[in-house]
Length: 404
Image 1 (spheres, rainbow, N blue to C red):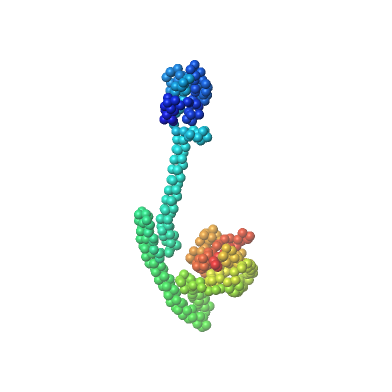
Image 2: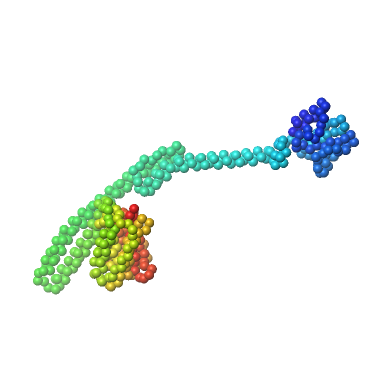
């Protein structure tokens, strides 16, 4: 602005006729005649007070610069500042100080660039974290047969190497553990098989002795031998069931018709309930006609639940057998009219060898029925749910299996 005013001053000295249109915008001006009277001006009243002080030669502080141009018939006073301005009146009125606009633009650009950098860095970081995330997820799922991908970030690579070493150590540890467990199961199965032979001999000889002429006291002793031999046989059968169920002997590769399976389960339930004159209520509501499973394994699990329900039900009570389908799951529910589960039973009844009290030992499962059912349900991608009935006294056990 100062250069423009100086240039205008020089042009006037060379003979240019000065009028308000030639004064650079947004300068303020005032034309005076030879009598120091204002002819034209764009100063307001307050600004004129400061102008008069300038004309009187007073010393005062101002953010403006005053320049005087001599004319033929008077003088022209131009006031301007040294800040940047737009030459357009519209823009200057809209944004009086372009420096502020530049600061705003710079700040917005800075924020935008920082945001772009942060987003790109986040994407890059996420990409570099993918191998780490994939490795941890596979380890959580106990899938240890995989190769860990490398990362371009040195620190991430160090973590991935540590995870790889941990994976190898965990794999060796689990393999050793699985091997020991498998050997243990095989030994239990072999031991149970070996025990069956002497027990059969003891039981057979006791039955032969029972046919001989004996006093009543001797017969009582023989009955004790036979009864306890029966119990040992049941223990052995349970141990063999556990070993078989937890081994890989059972594969889920049979296409089972739902209606045929339910007919077999109904027959099993009728036989069990007939021993105590228990009524049976059956409610089926399903759509799936067939699914892949292991029939022997599934029937064993559900019959265990049924047998438990019969054991804990009073004579001439009622048992409900309900089958529903929900969320790609087939749900087998058995409801009895017994005393139901205790608080401890709800938490622990699915644990191996768990029995709530002496009165619950009347069954033949010795704390294994629900444990085996839970194992079978998990093998089918499901679970066993325990609760007490809300409508009356009794327990409710549901076995969920995935059928898709």
